[in-house]
Image (cartoon, rainbow, N blue to C red; front, side, top):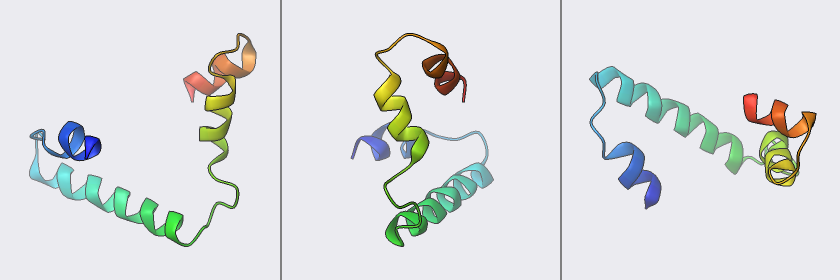
Length: 64
């Protein structure tokens, strides 16, 4: 619900951008459904783990 309100409900500058965005989201959901990433996404897990810590790992995670 939040995604729809905050992302998809806003007008995009060009109609093709919306189709491209939906295409990306659909492809990502296909990978999630197939459990393509066993154990979840490395970057999401690492960003949650290191978000409250200081140091090089957190800084690099934020940049990526």
